[in-house]
Every structure is written in C-alpha cells, then in structure tokens.
Image (cartoon, rainbow, N blue to C red; front, top):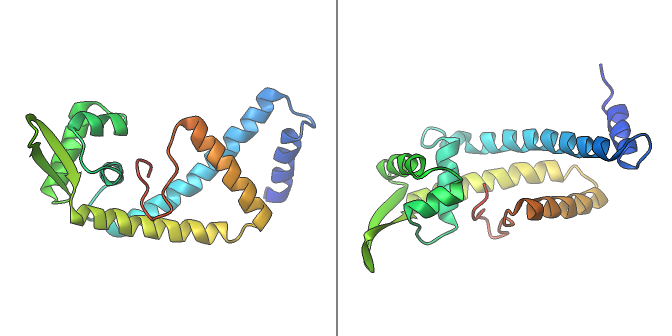
Length: 177
C-alpha cells in the first residue's frame, strides 16, 4: 500500500525546488488540482443526488447560470454555458417542461425571448447549493487554519486565472456551479 504521507512529501519536495524543474512543478500542481477536482465533483454529484429525479447535472448547471441573472436570451445562456445555441435550446426546452425555467417574449422587443429561473428552479439551486456548501465545509473543517488560508488564496488565484467569478457568500453560485 502506498503511504499518502510519503507521496505528499514527494510532491512538496518538487514544489520547493528540490529535485524538480519548472515542468515538474507544473505537473505537481496539475496532479493536485485533478485530485481536488475529483473530490469536488464527487461532492457536487452527491449534493445533487436528492434532485436527480428532477434534473441532471447538465440541467443543474443551466439552472445555476440562470440563477445569476434576471433573464437571458438563448444566445446569452449558450454563451455562459459554453455551448452552441441548439444545445442550450434543448436544455431550456426540457427545463421549461419541468417548470423550472420560464420563457417569455421581451415586451421591449417581441423578436427576443427572455429565459429566467422560476421559483421552483430557484429552490432546487438553493437546496443543492446548501447541501454542497455543507459537504465542502465538512472537508475544510478537517484542515488546519493555516492550510485553509493558503488554500483560499491559491483557489482565488486559480479561479481568477481561469476568469471564473467568485461564488457568492449569500448562498448562490452565480455563473459557477
């Protein structure tokens, strides 16, 4: 069995410049982020489990994107999801059918359709996000205070570098999930 402590110290040596070059350091960061992302995806999937009878992970992502806006056009939804308009249209159609999203004409421009989260959609986003926050908090509580502070700084820099807005402390995730 592989000792996690030894593996961890090997990664730390590479980070401190002892036995690692710039490419090796990048590999250590990527490995650490991939491992952390596996944990976060697992927590995300488990937090969505209670709503899984209602929405898929992809549909939930659409709800979260809409939760950060009053109303969006289909092009706006597609852009924020990073998908083409036809893919976004299919997601919106399904969510409208479930009563989680509304689709209405823009009174200022009848050619434009506005897509918004319904109260039921907002409830799903709020409940799943709260379960996710609770699960993440449980993991974070097992870290020492110094590690938590370092982790926060590193993750803020990482999300800034990726161009992702910070999650709201008020309980919604805006355009992130």
